[in-house]
Image 1 (spheres, rainbow, N blue to C red):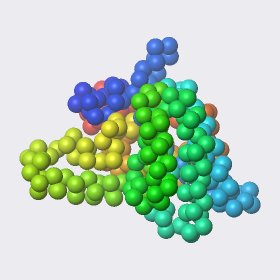
Image 2 (cartoon, rainbow, N blue to C red):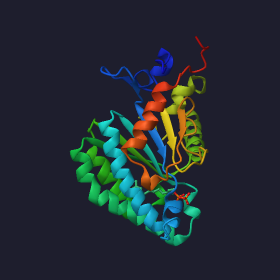
Image 3 (tube, rainbow, N blue to C red):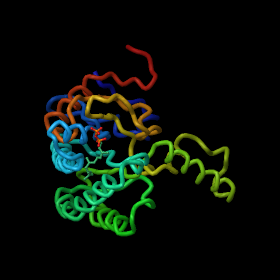
Image 4 (cartoon, rainbow, N blue to C red):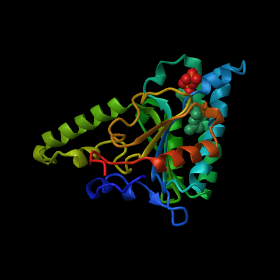
Length: 259
Ligand code: FPP
């Protein structure tokens, strides 16, 4: 049975690591993070180009956002482009960035209507000024919405995030605005791209791969991990519901003993 987190963790994770439903008594994770994997294999199995898999993947993003709202998730974080994905063939990188632009242009009004607050985490400096302006616009136009916090990780790498946070913290100590003795887990977390976010309670990876691939390394310290065989373009509300049901059966102890 999924238990409430100890109070010192609750402050930095979420309301007791999830929300207990009044009707069923089950626990819904407050923050679900997803490594959306398998677009290429989905396309290949249909004799289609990889980009077709990414387009279907974008449709699955829409379905997943709606399902997360319906199923009571408050924070949803999607890994859409890793810092390593820049090494993919130029054509695929261009297709992915233009798909992102398309998604933002066509979807932001709908996201705002659904009560979604949109954020980007990652090294946004690596994107074109035009795309960065779309990130800013999407964040501005959805700021303050409370139904679902949707974060998309773009040009994101967990180690990159930690190194950049350590560097910024070293600068703060050097400048005298931070006391080195005051550096603890909470203080460090404030320098991460995720400073304003609770830690994920549940991390899902699709496509059958069982790796973290440099995603939210610091933040997933106590996340429950669920690996699903479904390829991302086929992911729908039933897959999210199955993952939430699995989460509700987990016993989260945060290092405490059983019993
Ligand atoms: C991993 O599959 C997926 C990606 C690298 C891109 C994810 C992008 C989307 C889901 C669509 C656009 C996103 C948004 C937010 C609109 P892969 O290409 O590595 O697949 P493979 O492992 O089967 O080759």
